[in-house]
Image (tube, rainbow, N blue to C red):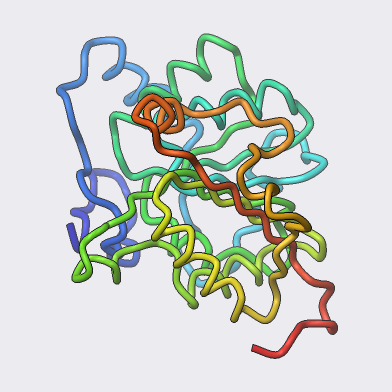
Length: 247
């Protein structure tokens, strides 16, 4: 899908980039439709109608101690677990797949989570509107690998996307990436290595085979392990501004 049709009542925004596949899967049931109609509008992250930056702290009823972003949260199990464990942190989850959004909405309702906001549109438009140094952490977990050579331009990780992530991270902020596809892990390492504002935090060869601290896991990870695929966990820190490395 190269672009997404505008939904009723939604302001026109930038066209979707084609780094994701299906927009919707199985038909939604009654409670899922209700949450989509009633709960999502209260949590949705919409962009201002002009070109003003969007301060992510203003999305929450009480200013959070920090703001974390998860790009492509899938079924939302990692995001919901982190939000439950870190009630003073504000979480933004970006996911265009409607069936994933309704799964997260169910978890939010069941666990009375008040610190999650949802971007159910293209995350690149959101990143472009965030001010510099406004996020403390960014997650990209098990993104679509687009394995065929002709598809790889659709992968989310690129020089441009890493530059944007580095821009919105605070000094010392973390970008965490996980995948069970070795080729995508290598792809990410190559592009992160030439990003002048990010540095890989690994100190030993075993570091990228161990799950992150405070890691609740995801259903995609469980599927990978069950299929005998070993995940790779990569963590990059945002260098202090003014001390960036040369690309």
